[in-house]
Length: 239
Image (cartoon, rainbow, N blue to C red):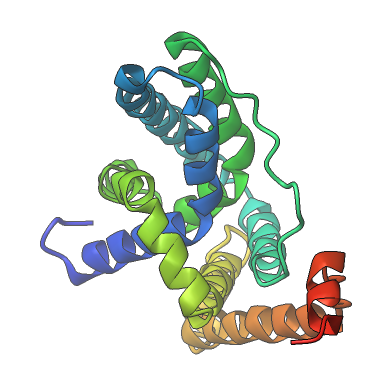
């Protein structure tokens, strides 16, 4: 895609949105990994940890872009994105982040890179789908979005907590990309482009709505979290 193409900038916006929506956990990991470092080393730990995580993610996405040219793999990737999008709308489990903080700079950097690699499956699949086989677009999108996540993570998390609709929009975006991947797989692309061009828009929109509806329905069916005993005791105490 050309740098001055509207499709290029639309894909960049999709990549940034994906990283912001799915990158909150990564920002928490970075904070936890560096929390025991001396004050003067924390910024270095964050910088080199993020640098290594970006480099590793570019390599992973490069391989993902290559693999997605094989028959049926885009369909499998689309199914994974649907699952990730629905999971995004579920209430978070307590104690989800169990990251050992390191007391050395090298240890913290290693923790950030390894944890990011383990947690980045959703990002890699989604970004590979949004990038449409353009590794340059991937690098540009990551370079713009990852600093936003790391240094603006607190603001991003506050916006998501205050406006839950942004999470639903993010889940819908994953569904949109999943629908697009399903109709551009090696085994479906030619038939869709010749026999059913309408699916190029209907499939992404339908899957986006499916992800949001299924995610909201499952979240509503989950039992409410038990309230802490302290809160109940406070309510029973006379004013």
